[in-house]
Figure 1 (cartoon, rainbow over the protein chains, first blue to last red):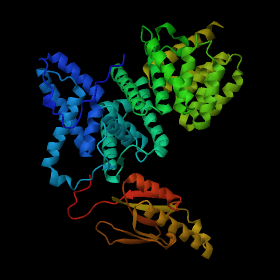
Figure 2 (figure 1 turned 135 degrees about the vertical axis):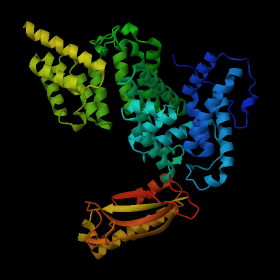
Figure 3 (figure 1 turned 90 degrees about the horizontal axis):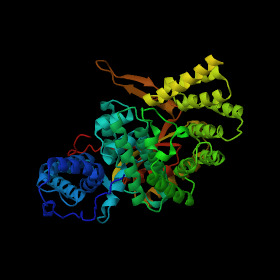
Figure 4 (figure 1 turned 135 degrees about the horizontal axis):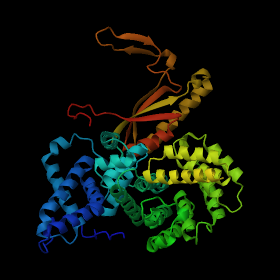
Length: 435
Length: 123
């Protein structure tokens, strides 16, 4: 269940940290738990409030880290009623101290450009930080790494694990991005209305990538759920900050519907269970209901690419069974998606859905899939040979199907997926031996 | 405010077909660009058009040897550097907005480094 975020309303600059009266001494275990929870829920808000003060990402990170260290030291005397507010106040105070000490030096350092204007409330700070991390002048790789580090609060080691790169590579990517933000004068601001749609798309893409990285991670189980949880949290935050935009709603709906299937996706013995074979009674009905209602809301306001993806997920999840899924409607959604988002992956998903329309011309589908094998973007994408293998099996072209399964097995980086595909191949070979 | 160098990269076909009319048309576009920069509250600090790349020479510094002079530009590319501006802008977003108005197919936008006497080494 998503945890409630702490109430941030009392975090006004000037509310001193030690004015929070210690309630009662707290056990070390309890302190560790609350600090851990505060780290997950408030890291980015605390950081963002310090960035506004310092306009220096490295310094702000240091001060935020300091505040968490101070929390571990002082909270055993009493956990504050509003941990997030306490942390922001302390981090900003640490920052002010350092700024005073380093005034002469800092005058010469490149600073983040901040839009002039009055002090604004905290959610705005966080949104500015998100848009800074996802600025189009940064490479997509850097946007993702920076968002995982600064907004999701992952360590460099965790960022490396998620992005499947070495730790020095992840560190270099983050450092380079921060330097570019300062040296090139990337502003710390929310884009104007007319540029928002284009800029929002990058933010949503990064959140979606963060979720996907966690969903099909090759890493440990722990890293995975941690990351998907943070991505969902981030999507929730975007909805709260931009309630009138349809696409954040759609993304959140999409992620919640995927989350709802989480338990049913892996069998008791740890095997991957495809959507077709999942026990639908094991889906989380609360998450599902929220996901469907958010997707519906988003679709009423437009057909952005996340709205359409959420619509596909919704069609799957509201169907009584895999067989009774409205495949015609699913194909229609992919057709709409192909107009605004003509990528080979969308084309592949469309072909896969097309193969499931009752009475579909499987030879025509196979032709669609064969054409996609020429796409360089898909040469190492296991889902293409896996889909071809399935269609070839249904066309009783078993030798070619086996070959396609072998290709898919060679391409997947995920152990569970590999076992699943190997089982399919074994079944196919057993059938071949019988006939 | 920060300073940005706009490097204007275009194909060199323009030089091949240069007539009085096309030259005047290009100058008019650059005049309009200058007006747009001022209207945005930014400033042009400098800028020039360049002769074509076949007129370029490159001096290569070589360790332990005399510098070597070669013909042609430093790097042969399909799109060549044809001119530049130095622009004083509020931030990168404003610089990029202005670069979109610049009459050139490709504009590389680079921040100018602060090398004044009290500057710290770049991060």
